[in-house]
Figure 1 (tube, rainbow, N blue to C red):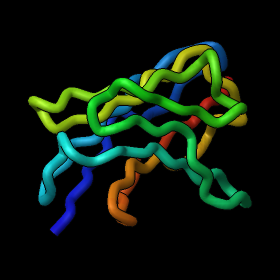
Figure 2: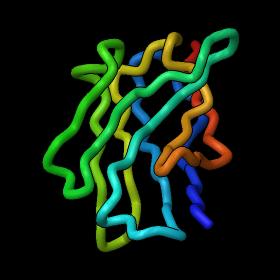
Figure 3: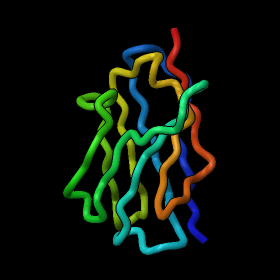
Figure 4: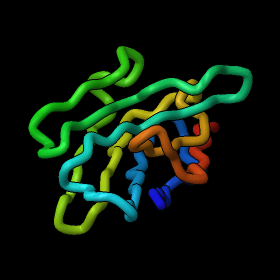
Length: 112
């Protein structure tokens, strides 16, 4: 019953920015921690960022610290991932996750 729908991906040049959104339903969003994952071609799925249920605590992979920001709106049941200073290495399908589930993902391609 958990449903997660990612959006906001696209093609961007190195150094550019994108803001991803994940609309959640099927569970009590305001009581659930949320995580953004990504999977690049030829690589394993990795955790990029996580946020506590209240939004007061966040964590990031070393590869994105200082460039990405995770946030949430518990009134709208949406978790966001602001991505700045994007690099080609950030190219991947990005997923949001909760309770061991994730959505279809949104493609982010960073290329000149």
